[in-house]
Amino acid sequence: MNNKNDITLFVGALKETILQSQYNAARAVNTQLVQLYYFLGAAISNKAKQAKWGDKVLETIATELQKELKHLKGFSAQNLKKMRIFYEAYPQMLSSCELAIQILQSPNKDYDKIGSPLATELGTTIGSSLPTKTEIKIGSTLSNQFHEAFWSITFSNHFLIINKLGNINERKWFIQKTAQNNWSHRVLQNHLKNKIHLQQQLPSNFETQLPEQTKRQAIAQFRDEYLLDFLSIDDTDDERLLETKIVQNIRDFLLNLGTGFSFMGNQYKLQVENEEFFIDLLFYNRNLQAMVAIELKRGKFKPEHLGQLGFYLSVLDDKVRLPHESQSIGIILCKEKNNTVVEYALRNASQPMGVAVYKTKNEMPENFQKALPGIDELKKLLK
Image (tube, rainbow, N blue to C red; front, side, top):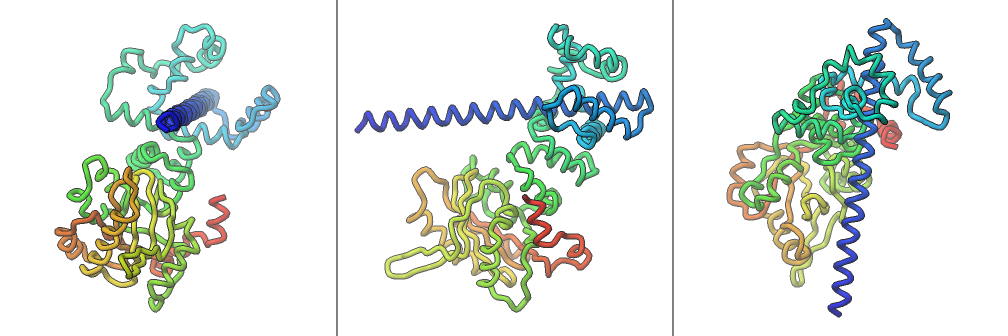
């Protein structure tokens, strides 16, 4: 029996090592690709300025590349233009582009063979702006962390951020959050649409009711407001109809919640002796290793809502939670709230809870509604 357990544990350790190695390899490949696209963008941008080329030259370059590299995809005129835009959006990042440094400064013969034509063309323009190896090591921790985040996210995510945001600080915020939370293209697209960087922090008691290693992550995970623009409901519709429509659109709802969520069920049954109780929506978050119970309220938040939710969390922790999991978290999702009332209500609550509001398409200003894509169009975008 002990031998079997040892084998199971050993296989589990091997599995984790293999998966981590595969993830690291994929991340390294992505970094190389992003740096390649950035450097090609730098080369095209600087050469175009030197030779006073127009955009039409990119068609010729793309055609010639296709002749030389027949089986290589991704270097169309449109993509070459994106690479140039990518570089021009962040010219200051050239100093941390290892590929550029290797091609333009390294004495390594292999890189000389690859990079000497470009080094000859560009050395006087962009090569002089590259740092020495000593200078690369110098810099603030924050700067180094941003550089690492910048090269770790995908080119498609970079271009999405460039297209949606003009402010450099907002771009940096999304780059760092995308890297930290490993946001997919769809999740990033949704967060950009919801402007989550402008939203207030969720009113909660996470600071006092969650352990140190969990509370920071929980605070970052949840938002003060959720834009459920895929829902169209009237003021007369009750909470059950709201719940039904969320379940019917659960994929869109999960995108709004953020990363790491999986759906455990609606009207999730809890049994306490001979009595039954039902949670509106129950989720599990892999990042937090915790269940998340959401109670829907069509009206304004009331302090008594926390009593019901706190009861559910106690039962979940006692009867459903597994030994390795963190304590359950509760969220009241209501139509409106007074943050002062919420603060007082949460002050003496003994379980980790927060109160957020939601807006549906019908509750947004008309000009916002017209600007948003329809459900069918949104589904096409997400494919």
